[in-house]
View 1 (cartoon, rainbow over the protein chains, first blue to last red):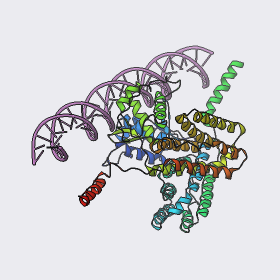
View 2 (cartoon, protein in one colour):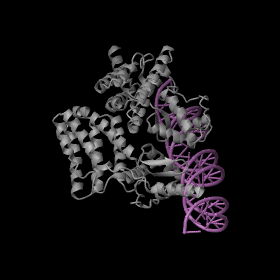
View 3 (cartoon, rainbow over the protein chains, first blue to last red):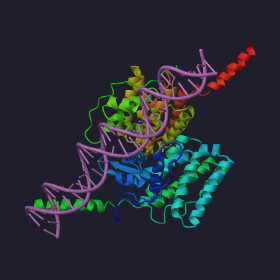
View 4 (cartoon, each protein chain N blue to C red):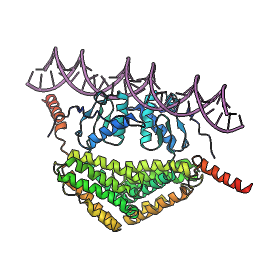
Length: 251
Length: 251
DNA sequence: TTATTCTATTTTGTGTACAATTTTCCAATG
DNA sequence: CATTGGAAAATTGTACACAAAATAGAATAA
């Protein structure tokens, strides 16, 4: 369980021609973002600037910018003079994130029901369909990704950009939580009845949709965060060191 | 009304010795953040890197980092190769921000009531007291600032860091909205009955507190965003078309 | 062997230089 | 006189260099 978290390697991150307008960083950001959120980079993994700069073929300047942004989004952790690592949400953070999602996603339901259109709901059903396909073929990663996409897309039908951005941030952090605490089979394993809420919305049942979302999010949280942190490995040495020092002094 | 928005000047931003631990940027960030949120820098003001670098006595490197962060928080707007300006929220953005605040602040009330302690409520009452003092002495800026502080502090009693951060972001953007659209007397002019919600919380009336917050935020929004955008420049052609038509008819 | 200190290496923080792009200004032109 | 064109200036984007800090490793002492 206590795998050695060495630096990254992936040479496969290279791709992505510089897109027409603007930011060459943007492509790098997207790559790193995806790598973190899709759990290609384990939480705790060091992200040295030099390594990334070389991997993406740019200077450290651009990498720093990307890392700063990811740090603002709480997907990486930057400590002074110690560089960046893939963030490891604590249990408290995980609970806060899910509580925040309940507030935002339930709160947005009224507007979502009010603004929902048949075309918009069809787009959502399409996401659910792809989600089922991914599950059927056992592609867990894609299923988790699409599950997140569904929640964000659902929030977007309320046509409130501010809320959609907030939720996108919370969902990406949720992915990190799942990476950190989710057991291999849990996470999305039986909670993908996303169809149900679409039916509730289509029938105009705002209160029902809100209730569904509340239960759904509690269920997801329960299936993921159950295990409390084990402050075992990192502190063991320190504890033993303390004991030894005291022993030496006291003997 | 259409003031020329030239660059900034303030030499007074210099201060703030580098604090003990970490980031020399942090002080610069705080200064700029305060300058924007407290409306010392009008929305739309250009923020050239060289000027800021000189003003704060650092190189552009540090300034860029700070500007990136403020851009992420939507307080400044960075366009490719065009530099940064103080953000100018659109009317749509303003409405979205207030709608988001209603969702978050109302949604957080249940937990706030559940976790409220006498000591915590006293701290909030202290903010309200200072708020009243500022109003009494006519210090509008301080009153607006403290009003925002109150909302953020209130959200903090729920002990959910994720929510508190989200709300802090929304509140700072609200300040920008007030700077952009608020008439000189509106904004905080008679809505500072923040005591009321504290009484509701103290009495354990979660639903009452939620309802109060809903009404309060609608009232604040109504008093600020009333005036629709004047699409002056971009629609110049359309305006000229109107003028030409009238001219042709009137000659 | 185990723990500690000192040194070498690695990694980050920050300033500077140069290239690329935008903006400004002025002259030429219709 | 307004408009277009283009050169000059200003401003941003990116790479690189050097200083400061942390980490790793080896030698030493217990």
